[in-house]
Length: 111
Image 1 (tube, rainbow, N blue to C red):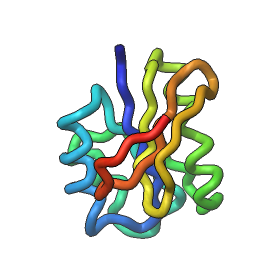
Image 2 (image 1 turned 45 degrees about the vertical axis):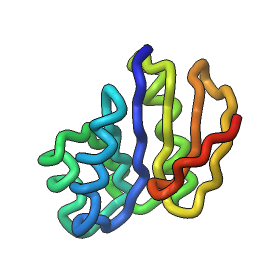
Image 3 (image 1 turned 30 degrees about the horizontal axis):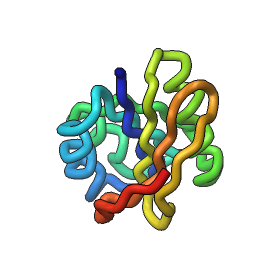
C-alpha cells in the first residue's frame, strides 16, 4: 500500500523542513503543496526530501488541500494523509484513496 502525506502551506520556510523530515518516517512520499509562498518554503521542502507542487500564486488553503487527492490518484497512492493546522481527524473516500485529516500533535484516530 503506497502512502502519501500532503502538506498544504504558505510561507512556512522556517518550519516546513522539520515537518517534512518527521512525516517521511511514516509514509512513502511527502507532498508539499506550496500556495504561492514568497519565502524559501519550496527550497526547504525539497531539501528535506518532499515533492513540491507549487501554485505560483496564492489560491487559498482550500485549493491547496484540493490539489492533494488528484496528485495521489494520478501517482497510484492508496492512502493520503493531509497534515495541516486546525483540521479535525476524520476519514472518507475521495477519488479512490483513503484520506485521513489530522494535526501533527494528535495521536487520536477516528474513522
